[in-house]
Amino acid sequence: MITVNDLKNAELKGWLQGWIDLCKPAQVEFCDGSEQHYNTLCDLMVKTGTFIKMKYPQNSYLARSDKSDVARVEERTFICAKDEANAGVTNHWKAPAEMKAEFNQIFDGCMAGRTMYIIPFSMGNPESPLAKYGIEITDSAYVVVNMMIMTRVSQTILDRVDAGREYIHAVHSNGAPLGADQADVPWPCAPVEKKYITQFPDTREIISYGSGYGGNALLGKKCFALRIASVLAKEEGWMAEHMLILKVTNPEGKYKFVTGAFPSACGKTNLAMLTPTLPGWKVETVGDDIAWMRFNEKDGMLHAINPEAGFFGVAPGTSMKSNPNAMKTINVGNTIFTNVALTEDYGYWWEDGDVKDPGTVVDWLRRPWNKAWNPAGPAAHKNSRFTTPAKQCPVIAPEWESPEGVPISAILFGGRRKTVVPLVNESRSWEHGVFMGATMSSEMTAATLGGAGQLRFDPMAMLPFIGYNVTDYLAHWLEIGKHPGAKLPKIYYVNWFRRGEDGHFLWPGYGDNSRVLKWIFERCDGTAAAKETEIGFLPTEDAIDMSGLDVSDEDKKILLSVDKEGWKATLPQFEEWLNKLNKYADQGHPLPAEIFAQLETLKKNLA
Ligand code: OXD
Ligand code: MN
Image (cartoon, rainbow, N blue to C red; front, side):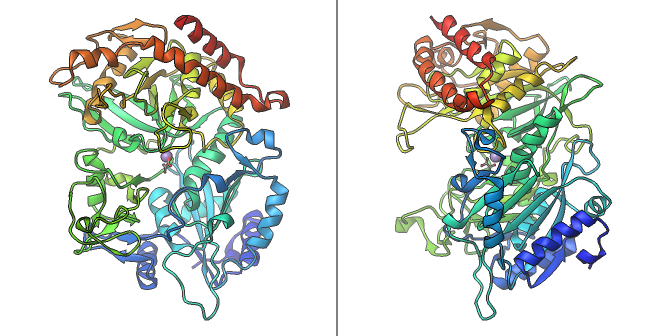
């Protein structure tokens, strides 16, 4: 086993030693990404009670978190840019020096009695010119094994960093030091008000304290691949986006790659792994959450890589109906479940899955649970997850690890809209597409703050993930559109969630979304029909293949037409939203005039 002293890179050595001195762990362990290390850590966590070994699927484990630590904590997430205007209205901000001073106290001794793990990892195929490396320090074995599924961890990465390759500095602690006589708990963490998820864009650092859950702790994902990477992308002329990547192949064997940005809980993983209902069509997966895109100077197209190596999917609602390929991926084994219910025979269960009534199970709060007892809450937490290797996915695209990435023909945007927004709308131009992304929104329900009818905006599904000022982010999107010689993807706004007046879904969704993908595919080839409308190009009445589909003519009409009055009524909310983004205009961060110009065009078209 190597030690810090074996390293040659003075910067790396100094950085690690600084954190060791501050955190004061009982021991330090380097991770080499080996199966043996993975198994050793899993066995250790079974002993400490963090993991339960499941009987099904094989080689899989269940973790149950502390009940206060169940999701990303946006209110405790900070962009520590030089000044507040650099963080912009979509981020919480803290001054870097103040935050560091606070961390010097908070981290002091925070790993007492624990092991500090050092994880060298790559986001993307390590041999790809689009990949980026990182080192995460953590005191959580749970984080290590999840990072081993979600990223590429290896000794080679450490060797390359030691030889001088650039890397992102990431530090994580559960924030639960262990006293000499203190009994441990299965899920150590700190109370909510002591949690910090911080990104330092200027020094490319991530420091996370107090939470062991998901994106708060697996620092390669949201913190690195989105927040820090979005800053690097802006500086280096590429894009880091909250997007799935899929490959769609037509019956003649011709294929295209498409990315899609949808807010959390809009079925991104399902779309990425969709089983088409259209005969002869095929969809394969490149990624389900994040896309890094860069112009390929040979073909002028944006090429995308999936920087991740696994899926960290929401379990409830995943079933053989909603996503058979995700179920098959999980069922291969090697899966970590977090906060799902445990069945009597040591399998998994969650709400809206394949088994309606599991009998008596142990719920995520470790209590016996049975539907017949009318329990107060669900058996699986609604943000319970599976962590599972992407390579196990039966429809993983052969190109998914391609070093040069896959050429993108179309970008989809979409939210959850019961009303107004049609099934699919093609932007008139790149700039119009950027406007569509900037005004991406979902309806709030009566249960959400703001109430029914109000829109919740989520630009490019990046609201909690843009590592800098949102106006500069939108300016960067517009800049990408001006790349010399670019063959830009077409941009589409889709909405699978439109409802009729009686509340029924107008569109069946799931595998039938392949019908929309087919239209998009054929639009890219210039062979599908569209009509120009006030809001963009919509499919003509019969341009979407509806064969064998049980959708009434009336519903089809609603799905494919412009609700002019509805759009007009939405405009004030668009305007209010854009003005809100523009708060730092006079501090050097104006919303690009082009975005306001697009709003004016829309207003004029609808007048
Ligand atoms: C996720 C999210 O977990 O977007 O992927 O919240
Ligand atoms: Mn996501």
